Image (cartoon, rainbow, N blue to C red; front, side):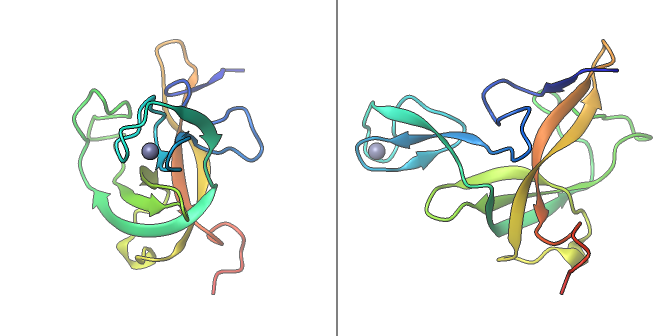
Length: 149
Ligand SMILES: [Zn+2]
């Protein structure tokens, strides 16, 4: 069996049946940050704690990435045959922070600002050792539950 490996350490909890993003919270003003930071840009405080961010949020804005982004930092397939357009957006985690993330949905007709989104961990690519590289994404809540309104 190929191993599954996160695209980067310390970004999301894995393995986990209910994965969440790992962020920071300022112990002075309560500001949330993602990814983790040791200092707070809001109050310039230098004391933060690592917290599990909310798994659900709302879509704040989005677009569809129709061509391979610059690599690095992009780690997915870039050749024309295997590249698939994908949605990207900002998901606002309630009371916490807006997170820039890949979206599982790339069909503009199925994406609406303000819709409920949920964190999922998805395969991004396969590395040179044959391991599956995982990244985080948000999917519309209900998309895979067969109960879409
Ligand atoms: Zn602060």
